[in-house]
Length: 472
Image 1 (cartoon, helix red, strand yellow):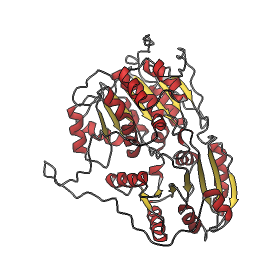
Image 2: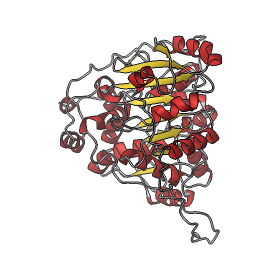
Image 3: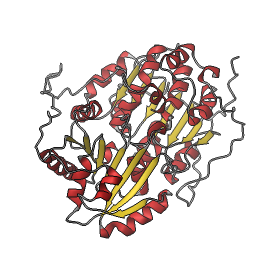
């Protein structure tokens, strides 16, 4: 039986009102004035476009994750949604299925999309695109991804050809609006994914300007792993009587994830990191700076560990190639700055190592969120120098985590027991570089580099375990 959409307040005739943010680091979930629809236990019982249900069934997905079960019935009915859940909790399909079902059968005019997904990083934009492509194909909706580091001309052309859904980083979308390549006044469904990072990274004024341009009274969905004062401001300004749902009260409170603070000496830190990197399996190692990522990668390669660096100093095609090397096993260790802390999903990744501790608890939680996804197990290890101990203790308390602590050194049995560390082979290895494409002149003859497609429609995740498709 088809559910009648619930009435939504008309926001088009009233100015936005921003309420003061709370003084606490996390704000209380708003109380609904209109009761939310109850959660459902099966996708098949939802009022969703039939092709989407068929695609879910074909991928072996029948039971939604908690955040999907709670938010999808309400999102399908047109309600605003506020969802909090750690990475890997299923947020992408929670908003993606509702969005695609509600626009199914509609056709956008050139440069006037019907739905918008805003994300903070290029990697997350591609991850969302890959996760939603099979479902968009099922309902014949066109996706266009617009991010920095790729050809803005191609992206503008893709938008002008017409698309129903735009998945974008705020800066590049603003540039395309300024060029006249796209307008947002027909966007009836807007999603903010990883909203806390967009608020923290200084995107807030830009995000606010973009949200001011979408259709007044349209549906807004906001998903985030944490809810702080800046996110509170977005919620109170742009969401109307949202259905709220929170899974995993602390993103670190994951029963399948272990946390270890390993105290090391200044002189022994690098050797400990190299021994951990030489373990069996794939590992992400986080460092604080781009040059530190390159330096550690060089050390690992010379020691016999198949490693590659991922950071903001790489071009987008290089970053894409490096991630593909890591996914396929050509590279066992990814040495990354915080550019990889969100938007990267690697099946079977069981260890994250903070070679350099993060600067705050949010970064810690999002780095750790690369492992223990969708109920899998994982371990987060942080190497701590003596001068960093007090700050790490404070960070763990803020994150609500009680880690195991130990003093370790390379070659010790305790380090091996915790991490699987072992001495590297010492035989240098060479990894084919993530090549930068040769410059090509555009049709305008301006000599700009064409670094990628503006409309990546390939379906991601082929060959991955089917259950994890619901987590992205």
